[in-house]
Amino acid sequence: MKILYLHQYFKFPNESGGTRSFDLATGFLKLGYEVEVVSGTSRKDLISSKRWTAINKDNITVHYIYLPYGNQLPYFKRILVFFRFIWHASFKLFSLNADLVLATSTPLTIGIPALLKKWIHSTPFIFEVRDVWPEAVIAIGAIKNKFVKRVLFFLERTIYKNAQGLVPLSLDMKTSIQGRFSKILESKPIQVIENISEVNRFQNGYSTQESIIEKTIGFKPRFCILYAGTFGRVNGIDYVINLAARTKGIDDSIVYILIGEGALKVEVIKQATEKQLLNFNVFILNSIAKQELPQWYHETSMGSSFVIPVKELWANSANKFFDTLAAGKPILINHQGWQKDTIEKENIGYVLPEITTDEAVMEFVKYTQNKKLLEEQQKNALRLAIKEYSLDVAVEKYIKLFNSIHKN
Image (tube, rainbow, N blue to C red; front, top):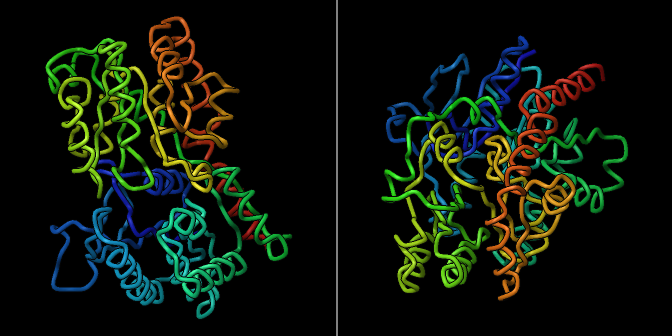
């Protein structure tokens, strides 16, 4: 079976960003599937005289079109990039043969080329729902126009209706989708496949001889919290700065390391500077390649993932959550939803309230000093990563979905 993998932001491990699509594609290849990827890129080294540039790396053929994109772009320019990709990717898909298209969001518009490919070439597609888009962007106020909302909900419905199968990345996403589109999804396979804890990468990709944290910040902290992700509006990293300011007054041996890029990074640096935290107990670094993350997680005390207090965002399946578990470290979050339930059920981390109080901060500081509990949570985190979220588990679920679609 040949799979056309449609992902606007496909990344290899030597690049910064999530590698779910790479990891899954690699898993499919090992089982004898053929995989070609269609993606956009901001890499200037891939600019050529032709519109599309094809490379073969790790036995994966990737077709790239140069469309610079970043979280720092205004929403209008981001939307423009989305539509340019739709246009060019649709024609690219028409020129490629395949048995199945796997389209992974975000954005929701990634489903349009797959939809057209089905209508014109009768090629079935699976739609992977990474976010409940447009529900989430509407909830945060990014889209307010009523007409645009109706168009996006119509598009969402059309994509779901025509997909041969849906893969939401969390149970909460599945619940949201089924709750809004129950009639058109009654007989359609919906398989939850959460983001991947790539255990091999995080357990074997570090050196016990190196001390990158001490080398970078100048000392070895007693307790270190790592955030490796986007400095965007939905991430609410100002929460971390406020938390750092409050824990500093109680226990200044708790250190926060923030790695990444994004539209609000400059503002976060400004806040940390004004509160006299920057380069004291808050260290803000540039993004790094995925393959460099295992060393940072190995040396840190716990990983973290944050979102602003909007219910629709609780369904997220953030890479940060699964990378932390793969590294065998406790996870820190500040929201409710399925991740909170998992943390509490499996004893794999700590859930902060949406709004921190003196009492809540004091309890968290005490938690960081509980070595026995932390050691127990480390073991639980790795055990859960292997059992529920490993690459092997994700690939096995996908293969069952492929087979069920192929039979039909």
